[in-house]
Length: 385
Image (tube, rainbow, N blue to C red):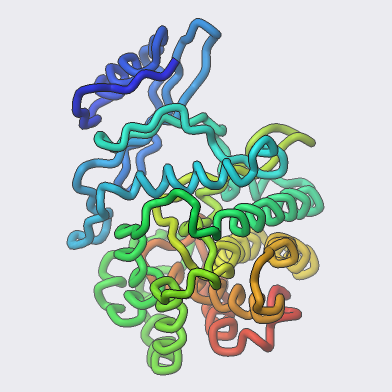
């Protein structure tokens, strides 16, 4: 059904997407007026409803512009080959899960990949991200079950894709370029970062309040944080492949979807453009930080929060294979990355998928410094809140 497109394509307008899809999907016709724009900071992404001989369906079309500039960073361009890495990680992850893809964890099927034109057509996994789903869970037990299943399967993906023989591009420039924004930019360039913060209005902490907390926090902690964050960042570039996994690179609650319905639902992972070889604690640490912030805003009790937050990282580490480091050491690494992600989302420009009050902002800021400077003190109870 899939045919390769011969001509060069730069998809800008809706009609460009329609023409391209109809040229590569044999026997298809795009339903006019059915395009939904899902574009982010750089990529042009559309959900397209189409008619095929086998029936009606919807697809996700992802197109990376030739020169991608990140919104809010006028000097930062992400390399146009980052879609090759998205394709690489999703392909490797699906291969690791094999016929179990969609049981406990789902990786979207890639229906068409056009590397020269930076276009990928994927299976549509639905409209509900984990960030959007969290407020709708009636039972914390159901959420825990989803996270445990996903943690087990991510450990499998990380275990099976560690092998150097896995067919993947060698160096992800987009991930390397993004590294300072994960670990150091918000510490070393606070004025530049705060200049592009956006006001939350009356619903959350104000920019002036954030600036005051930023200044006080950095004055008190910058000197001790700089070497810790540099150490975490450097682990991605160290030539120690036997201590690394093939990280997704951006595993927050917006890049995880709720796939399926009721008892058959599972979590699904998308958007792996920043994938790279890195420490095993990175992906689960990032996800833990986001769930922590979102549960805090939703007003979950400490008991439920503790149970939910422990679900993914505990099962992940218990199922990760091939490391000589103990589970205790790996947990410390995960805690440190949780703290680093909290800090960069609080003091960096990106923020969380929820709006924080001043009190919630301060509480998470305090957790970030605790996790980064004293991870061993929180290895048992660091998810208490």
